[in-house]
Image (cartoon, rainbow, N blue to C red; front, side, top):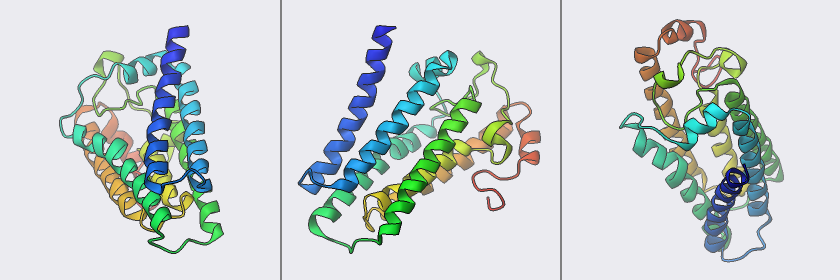
Amino acid sequence: MCARVVRQVASVASALAVTSVCLFVSAGRLDWPNAWVLLALHLAVSVIATVLLRRSPGLLAERRNVKAGKNWDKPIVFFVVLVGPIAMWVTAGLDFRFRWSRGMPLFAFGAGVAAAAFGAWLMAWAIRSNRFFSSVVRIQKDRGHTVVDDGPYRFVRHPGYAGMAAYTLATPLVLDSRWAFVPAAATIAVTVLRTVLEDRTLRKELEGYADYARRVRYKLLPSVW
């Protein structure tokens, strides 16, 4: 138990360290309040996700011992999880350092914090509702994979990705960087691509998913798409 907790704390700490380095090295200074707010949001999200996963040992094991997923998913995950976020943090830091763009109104910062909180809440709800919430796209036959249609899955088919997109969109707002919207938009576009490809995979390979997709029509945004 102690070793497991240590590993989880180390994982959260290393992720925050990478984010901090990207933000403050590119900014060239530590007195950047927006960056500290983003780090606080990241910490809160990491703690919530860790607590939820500890309550679902099967899902925790699935996400820790990552099994082979679809080949097309590897570059997508690499971009969404690493390249896109790092590009946002570094771009925002350089924007803050060299004043590439004018600052946004204060309400934009508030909207960013609200969007980040909403995105984090939606991802947490999806994790809590879906014991098959894997980090890779694969049909988990070894775990008795079935369709999940409760919680946020009553409204959209991929609420986790919807939460990720909201959190990504919030990042430039929280960091007060117009230029950071460029990598943010690219990251959201790749997330949408993953949504399309995963949805197609589930329709073909997961029993009952096609019927579920007819009942729940929208992938990410109710009444939109």
